Structure formats: structure tokens, C-alpha cells
Image (cartoon, rainbow, N blue to C red; front, side, top):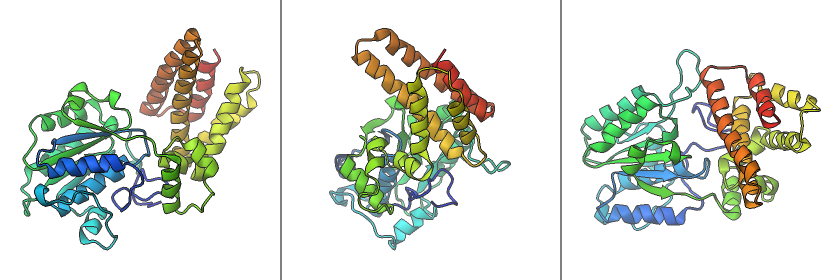
Length: 339
């Protein structure tokens, strides 16, 4: 983990520093051809599950454009770049004047990453595009992810998208595009990335240092996501998932000991990432259970679980917004499930 970069998981390579991408050949070819055509859309919504390579693809395409500012003479394929390439090093260090990365900022008072991308961050994009590039090159903004924009920030971004500057590109990343303002989605060209295949995920984990065969069990649980694989491997995610499923399969609150044990584990001071993994796991698993119930013809159970997933998402959002006690937040998950 690059400890100086908030939000980067242990064992991961920050997207701006990652020079290779596994899978997504069709998406890369689409972007390269769209750029070469000279008629590329000014905003591309790169959507797909978390951890499948959206940010890495965005940085990779940005490097491609900045290295070949004339679209008509650009290569047909986006090539890997070496770590010693000057442009690669410039982008990795955040020193490029032609690339802006917008993400949740660090709160100067607490030292922790804020829960949203604020309007002040988006205003940086306004200033960024308002400056004249000394090289006449493209100016590219990566919004990572746009799901984190609060309402004011989303509206501020929309204003820029409505009147995009010349030779500008917005790469808007989203794990859940349905949460974005419809007006933002309508101004973007959508490019969806699928979960990685097992062979590609194996290659990606090998690139991050996993030995051959070491990650077989993790790959089966990762649903094609490198981020989920790292959470399972380095943050105790496998044990958390196993404990959650075991409690759910018990079917009642009769034995509260494993519930309290899980809640205490997740509420420890140094378990921020594990807790976030748990909140996502809960929503994903219950949504999957709702789909399975629907497929089996149990529409009442499917409806109950679908409603529960929405209620739990709101529960977690409220707990985060008001900094509520995590142990009680976790305990309430099972109260809602078994009511």
C-alpha cells in the first residue's frame, strides 16, 4: 500500500502509478478508436463494479491522450508505459498540469478522508479548465468516483459538463451510475466494464505479488474485483464474510455471542476498511438473496429482502453522516434482518 495516498488498499498499486491493466481489451480498443476518430465525446462515464480497473483505465487513457495530443496520429492501441517514462512519472507524482484527479479530500482537522466529494473540490475543476495550457495539450479531469459527489458538487459538475471547454475530457467513474443525477448521465457517453474473468483476476493478483495458486479461494469469492480480493486477502474480509453468512444461516437471534463478537471486531479503532467492507458485503449479499428468492418464485421474500437492502443502505448512510457508534450500527443490521 502507498500509505501516503488515502483510499488505496494495502497491497494495491495506486491507479496513477499502475502501468498495466488486465482485461477490458474491448473497452481500451473503443477508447483508442474514439480518440483517433477526432470526434470523441467530451465526457465518458466509465461504470462498473468497484475494483475492476475503472480508475486504472482512466489514467491509462489519459496518458495515451497526453502522449499523443494529435488524435489523427495516435496509435490504434493503448500501450503499456514504463515506470521510467517521463510522462508516466509526472502523472504518478500528481505533477501534470494537464490532468486533474478529483476524489474525496482529506479532512485537515481529523486527517481522515471525508465521506463525500465537496463542491470546493469540483470548483478546482473550474479553475483547472479556466487556465490556458502552456503546451496547447488536452486537459483531462478524472472524477473518482462520481458516486461520492454531494448534491452541490454534482450540480457544480453539471454546469461544467453543459459547457465543456475546448480540448477537454471528463472521465467520470461510477460504481453505481443509478445514483448519479440523470442530467449528468445524459451528458456522458457510457462505457461499462464487466467484472474480471478468473484468469485476468489471477494475473492482476500475481502482478500485486500473489504466488501462483495462492489466491484460488479468494478469486472464487471476489466476484471479479481486485479490490474485493485485496479486502479478503489483507483485511480479514474472508473471516468477516464467513461470520456474516454463518449468523444469517442460523436463522434467528437466539445465539447473540457471534453477533456481538463480529460487532466488536468491526468497531475496533483500526478497522475502518474492514467495516466499510462489511457494509458493502451486507448490501451485496442481501440483494443477491433477493434475486435468488425471486428466481425461485418466492416473490414475498424477494420483496422483503429488496426493501431490507434499501433500508440497510440508508441505515449505514445515516450512521456515517452522524458518526454513530459502529458496534450498535452492526448489531442493528441483524435486528432488522431477523425482525
